[in-house]
Image (tube, rainbow over all chains, first blue to last red; front, side, top):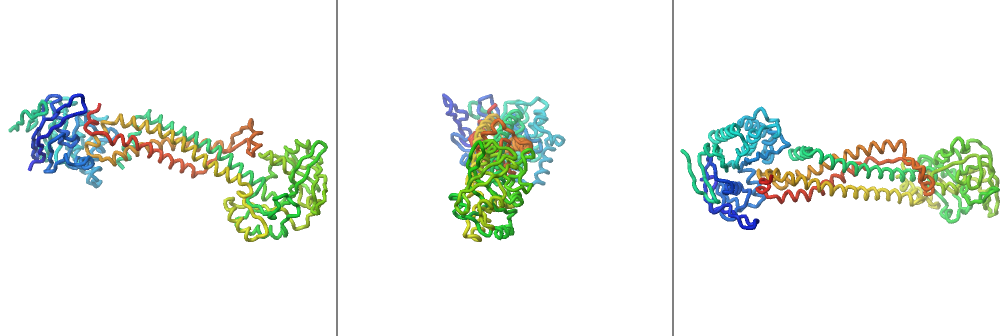
Length: 228
Length: 408
């Protein structure tokens, strides 16, 4: 059974002078353990697709099923709970909580899930160690480089034990070294722990690492290629 | 706990803005608390002075004595009653007085007064008038000279008398005859209530009793001082049942104005603080709206990763309350220092002394605020924080996570 099944998904923005058809009836499925990239130029609809898969935006029509459950039917309150327990997010601008340390940022999502303190502590240290930040647990975001902040964001996304992680242009603000480090970490997590990653990106370095590349343009899937 | 931690740290993200709000709250509270303490101090001083100089806490009279100060309407067996009352729990001291309406005359002027016949020893245990006679203005019946009189500075000025001057008092005696006697001024007092001062003169009980021919054992008034003035109504009720033939009144019945000013000051302080906090509340709302605007992206991210509406709401509410509380504690601390300082040295508005004393208030007042007031204010500040957070929190809850994350 697929983890995510997207059927005939459309999104039209009507709050503009002229309606904008951002996504035009796409169909996609993602299996457990995929390391997939949705690529395309700016305005092609890749972030909108990712947002709808993550339940951050409602589709105009079509369905997004996660483990057979149509999330477009969930109320906004249930959708928040759904995201908390099923989806990890990594954003382009890191989006960490600036007043919390790396450790607290990772713990935060587990606290929302009401984890027991000892287990939460163990998991936080293990995850931060796995993203190479075992020695920066008490640093606040403004004391970390962009690459380190994005690794904390990955650690936070992993902490809640999600079904899959959605990463929206995660390398857009990073230099080559940080990009490579981040991608290596995510690939390692994908291989060793079978965590599903879906990226939206136009960064060739991400495309090169991805095992599956879905090209979109004008809100449509123009190619869907699985690498060997 | 994590929400509280985030809320607390968020306050210090924009130190200047938070400092402005904190100082606004603190100065508002200092203004409100200090002026409340000043008014409260004046009112309390007025109440305490009235107990000490005029009314004590409970008075007993013949039921019709107050109608026209008829000298025949006396309390009988006064000594026995004084003895019995002094044994009642909560009674600190007790004394009896004679009270006779009279005309005080000198070569210069005549004035209507009430002669108060006192027993100096027990009088000093109940009333503090003797403290109002300073060493340069004679004494309060320390010698046993007959027909001595103590008058107020205001009356002395009107009658143009000084120490050792004579005043002729004319009044109706126990038999209805007009009679009089000459008294020599031995002391001059001054209280903070000039109208009262002008209307009362003090002589020895024995001297007055003799000229008015009031039989031994009878008095016009029994005055009772209690350990706690708030027990007055209960003890007065006991006395009513013990002495049904007498009229027993507690201080709030003798001077309804006193309980009125106490309650009025309470009410005024409440209204005053609510107005101040209301105004501050709008300032806090404005600040929190700016906070929401600035943190739109962050709030979008929090909703995106799964922080539910209740937690978002609580986080904003905690931040607002903590911000308000920091200002409140600072304001309360400064107020405490100011109130303690001026509570000791007093605030002297001698330029208004005449006007103040004409309505019974002292020109020097000592601000005071009961400790529970600080707790009340803290609770009011928390409530203000809660109310002030509602609108900004709802604004935050209306954010669309995807749009909010996209904002710069």
